[in-house]
Image 1 (tube, rainbow, N blue to C red):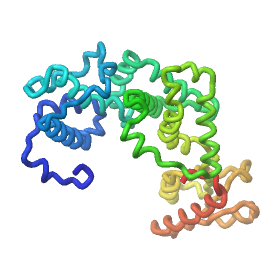
Image 2 (cartoon, rainbow, N blue to C red):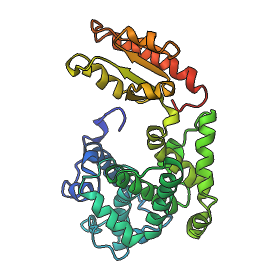
Image 3 (tube, helix red, strand yellow):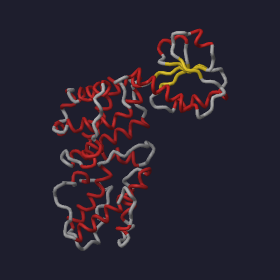
Image 4 (cartoon, rainbow, N blue to C red):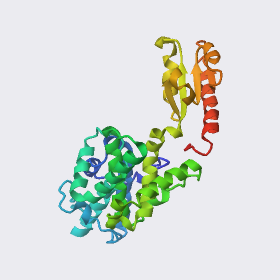
Length: 331
């Protein structure tokens, strides 16, 4: 129903529209479009469960998520006479729990970022501390640089959210366990990355998080996937280093610069003769380059080239990348 957009089964039913805004308020604004549709489906499923005598059981203990936290309205279903007071509370807790256990943060300026950060500081400081330790390890020992706050905060919260899910579901969260865990091909670059991940979980300061230790193998797999896009972007050895040589006229060649900068496996730099040997390939707009640097691989880009030719240029660069990277790639 959700994937195919079929609403035929929903037509006979109406949703209490006053409930949705309260639930959506706990999701980032960029997620509201599909979150609203999913929540409507959840409410329909809830309707059938309750109608057929299957309110939520006590298999999952949601109370730690909300203990002493007044931010969530747990009286959403107070008007439902088919539920006991405890069942009303459990149904509300279960719906809110989706917003506390999904790694959906991508925009650091969304107001919910700070709200959710405050939530973890109060409710689950150990989850936040573990996620912080993980990021700090990669920044200090692998990346050798610190992520900007704009990128770091959403990632930090995503890590905390999946920890919350793993603990809440006792290591068996359906959305993470069944769908997120596709296995990386065992190329050499992936072995390097996986070893760095597992080295982190062997560190003494990590072993002190005893409440999480029984789930370390599962946490490692999830964290590996969440960090991978940042890893690919930061680690220079996963890129094709491309130098660019052109006449000093931005009007003529700024378009190709912008295009090449958008290709994720390319690290584009203005060509420097001092570091000529460090480039995997140089793109040049002048015939003089091959005379001055006969041993440096190069591709020529003429001012008369059409936009359609950019596609073929990328094909050439992809071939060079494969030859350079071999198994050391993440594509």
